Image (tube, rainbow, N blue to C red; front, side, top):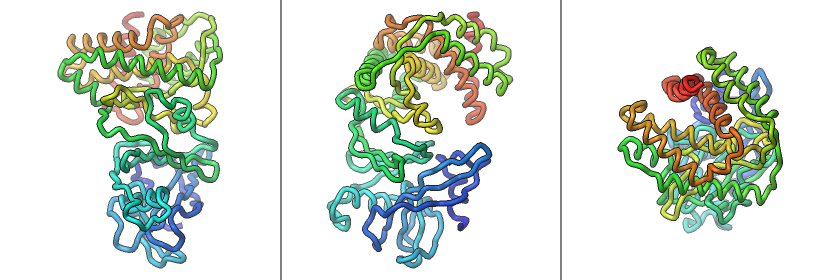
Length: 404
């Protein structure tokens, strides 16, 4: 194996094996583009060995005429059977490669310029890659798990509700590899919209009320499509307390607050509550505010979790808690995040969102328990990935401790 892909993966944002992963092999799949013609595009499965097992990553690979690769997409130059010398590129980082791929998928005659959609690369994704082509947003799944991804099936079930329309899914070798959904050109990113409002002190009560209604509509649609189940407060309490103990063992910064956090979780009664399919990773970054209203996006769940876990029924209040925690993060955009104005903005925004969702329907402490669970998760995430941000969830944890 050449050094090209191992070196490229070490600087790829979506590759999670930088510290402990070793690329052990690459398995090419079939060509998407006409055989023998450049640019040539195919999916290749990279097997990465780690101490705790093996991971599979999706390499969408482009082979271009030598000297034509965009520098930021270039992996290496090799001799390829049937083609001679070629530039190897990470296709989602190459306009040339993605235009060739989409032309091949869209048109019976990929050589026809009329079949090609202008491509705009997106660099913000961390766990996946994405490009925009015409009226489509094309997401390339990177870290793969066996079985179909929950996102296509959930978007299919939610057709007509406040989500993007699903155009197509590209599958291969037992994996979902690529998702093509509606691109809303005039939409605002929900996180950017909310942070700008908070920074300027502008209330967005009506918009957050509408977002609450949109989430309720999505939850209703998921319950209609996939049914509901039940769980008990006793079972949830035990799981969340176990998670808290594990987090405290790994994160000493949580130790002084363990008793207060545990008190919130222990307040859950033993009663039964309704469970269903949920978004699973809901925050403002998973929302778009379009002229016609909100759209909720990115239904794949936690990218590193097994598919069965992503499909597992949960309380819809987990999603509600995720959005409320996201609103708390929004305060970081304010000049005085812990001051009276930012705190009042957060409380007002929180109430507006809950009113839109229907907070009168919350049965018994589920929301508070899920907010605490989310705070604990956030502290761990920030310590490992963004140490400068850890003060945001830690401040929320300290507020819980103060109340208890």
